[in-house]
Length: 188
Image (cartoon, rainbow, N blue to C red):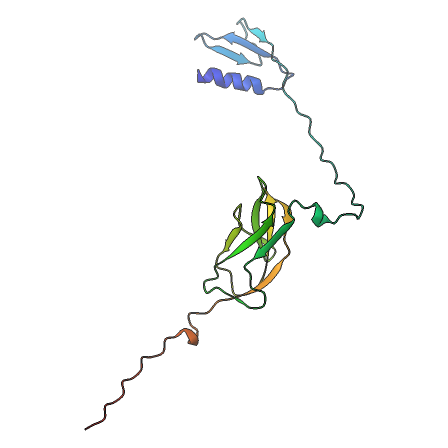
């Protein structure tokens, strides 16, 4: 049964201009081939025309007349990061923290949120508006969120700049002070 199916699939994969022949071999198996065997009666198989699809050429976007800005054509009226401190450093001793995304209207099917950290995609795209960053080095960073469909960016938020402050385990401020010495008792 499997050889017959394999032969049939191979026969269907041939170009439409090729002729297909069918015959029964010495073991009683039906065989499909593009060359008729010598000395064996083979009948010609008429195949239906193959399905074809015309390639759709994408239309160029319409020229802007200046009446509307690119942001008004964006699918989301609100797309911004929240939870990033404005004027102070973000304290994250292990470099892990969570940022939230404010988005309106709701995320459309097939769209995902992806962070852009220091100009590079960060982490996996997600449909959850709360995203975690892990082990971010200390110092100044830029962060934005993008709505993506596959690998294509649909819309991107404004870039936020922030500073990560991580305390070192070797810092003198983190060392525990020695326990207080007991005060000597006065002699009576």
